[in-house]
Image (cartoon, rainbow, N blue to C red):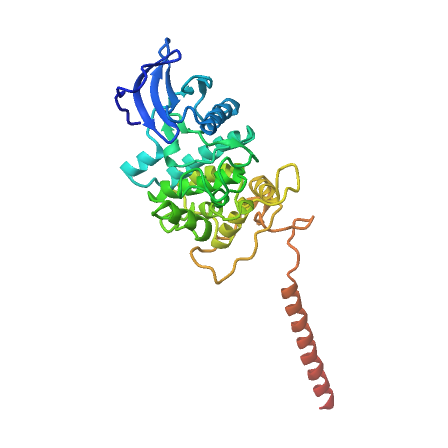
Length: 390
């Protein structure tokens, strides 16, 4: 993370922390690198002087601190101290060394599919903890993700709020970053955890292509594209494209959950890291995309898609693969499994067997045999009748 020297107007001491460098500045205030008497380094955020008297900004700042206190897990910066009653309210979190995802991609280029999937899996898992605390980040983007040696960390909950809360802005206005805002944010509707899923999808697209899936332009143009146009995912690796596309669905109900994302991205990261090709044919990959889309809960496992995924990964799978369409391209049919499965020779995971271990009769083959039998019988009968006339 780039650091800058303190300016003349910057404070040197805030609370019990001594400030050393500037880490950055945003719409709400300035972030400093500081340390306490024990030498513990912190990132300390102070509201700008001209906003300290604004009650709305104080409310947002208090919400950020409240969110940081409720969140548990290793994917966010831990809150160290805060003073909301100061003339210039401030709070300090654990300092996270490492560049932002935005800076890393800008300097080194797009990430590989394995790297992007691994980062996405960790972020999804972190968002699970964020949402369990009743918080929606609302401004997840590459510059708010720090790549520490221990994994990615989500920072800047400055406009986060409790799930289901109503907006502080007027309807039709949006708070956040164009290109990473969800359509419901642009419309001024209530945000949900699915709002962060949309932002995560846009962030993964940026990590894999070094560009926004909605291009570039003025704020108005970007917001229009988010609501009315489909994202451009041409450079996203095939292994990630279906999942990213599902995250960027216009309807929040059609986006996958963070738990589903975490599980699927871990699988993709492991496979890509080993250099293994996609094992599923195109038709089955399409069903994988359907699995990450949420559906109505039907059991204690959450929803039908989640339950299906659990069954497919478990031993003794009871699900059958759908027949593949010959019109699809882009993959070949996998070889028939002739090995031993579930202790029975010659049966694959998608073949049902009888209690005796034999396959059921093929109805089509049975009909053919009956027809042949009748034809042969008729020919023999005619031959016998001809012989008797002679």
